[in-house]
Length: 177
Image (cartoon, rainbow, N blue to C red; front, side):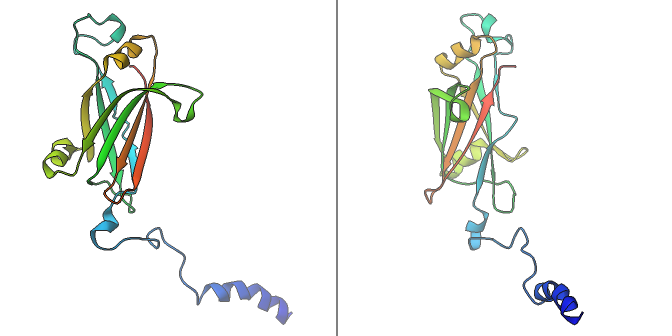
């Protein structure tokens, strides 16, 4: 009987003197300001393709209408899951949508590259309301032609190369609305 009680209490006794269960912040890395470096990149769901005010359907747009514009928002989070700013090199690639390819990325139609290392450039693209970086990019004519097709989709791929060489990435399927 004593042996049975001892065996039942043994796991409880082993758990008591040991370390408390790991909390989400138990695996913190970095020291100083680098602990607030981004660990993930997300293309925010507010990202969209906008058309000229007079046209909502690219298939019926007049020949001289301005090109559709990609309005991309990038959100960075640190190890505490808080959003914030960073420095680094941003690449936004627009690809043809391909159902059977990884991340649905077909051939690349357009690329936008921006270095956020300058304080002026960094501030220019920072939106303090949504706490995202906000980019307005006119689409390449090839991408605009693809959008003109009925229910055609594009894939947006974003990468951020941090000063330490680490690369964060995300992708989003863009659908005409």
